[in-house]
Image (cartoon, rainbow over all chains, first blue to last red):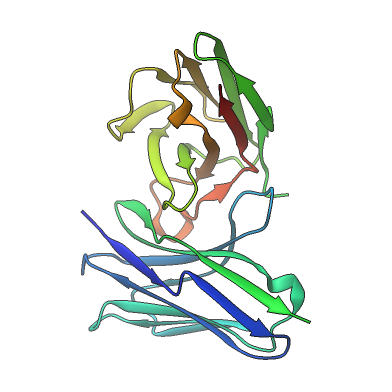
Length: 109
Length: 115
């Protein structure tokens, strides 16, 4: 089955800096890669996703890149703000969604 | 709000109790999911329902019993649980059958504590 590795497990940045979270997946047939943000006391919320026919997707301050050859994809957050602090999960899907372990992002004012 | 609601938000139960978790989606989706989220572990898929039919049981112990009476409601019946079952239980829904629209939307979860 699919295996998703996510790094780093914790990330601390200063407000205004960029943050990058990386994930690798094992099943080359995976074709859908969402990113979720989970704030304290809430369920995961989809923030951006990318499909295997696209190499990059951007939505305001967040972007996702996909390298199918290397089987890795990354989340980029620019101009970070304290409200970006949360746990971020990547996932990959061929059939069912498989999640990474999560990254705790802390943005210091 | 994602359009997926879960009740109760918090639940404390003894190992001999029987309780149920409820999930309702207002998105018109036809697939619903139960996930378990434990500390320092990835989200674990438990059950999948498509058009009210269970299509996946991810080797979940029989003390967890799902029920899907219609495409909008999903229940998780709990009995004789163990302390290690304490976790956040998340419900999600999606529009199955169309890859371009099958994004999963999650509810806020039920924080379960088994004493």
